[in-house]
Image 1 (cartoon, rainbow, N blue to C red):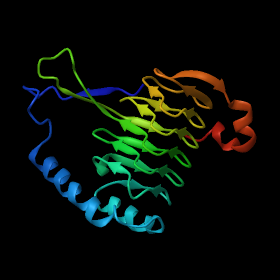
Image 2: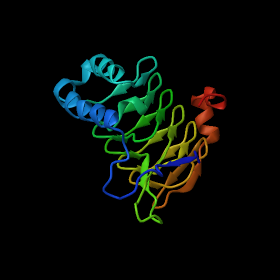
Image 3: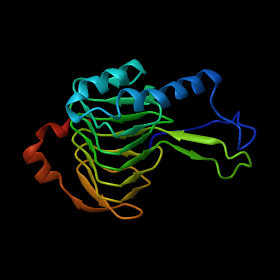
Image 4: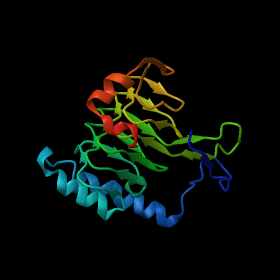
Length: 198
């Protein structure tokens, strides 16, 4: 699991954990994506990547971002070559999200980097990095919790709730997600680079 960060300066649950500058950036982004990208057809992926870069996303090579994908803070998003953020997928990037080379986050999957300190009266925001390894697949409507690392070549089944790390080249499913298969041998026949890639 990646370490989590607690926003300890929050004094009340209704208080924003963000600085005024960050809130202005979020407001600008809130209008920019619908106006500039959400209406675009699939082939205009390069344009959407350009807009994401303008708002601080780290774009490597040629990933794909669907026009209906939701990204909370693009400056916390890193996409590697061939990575895919699918139809209505939600990158709730209050903290960093990294999607590795050739990895897929399928339709309506939710990568949630934020939660709360429920043992505190202020319910302080807590964020944790999410990373999706090379050639991994996060199925439709899966929910990934803050701090989770999904290993290279792993598969997360549809509607799974991932609360802990997923080892490379394993298949997990259910709520909470549990290992249902080891795909090491089959995966390596098709993706030998998974031995070293993340």
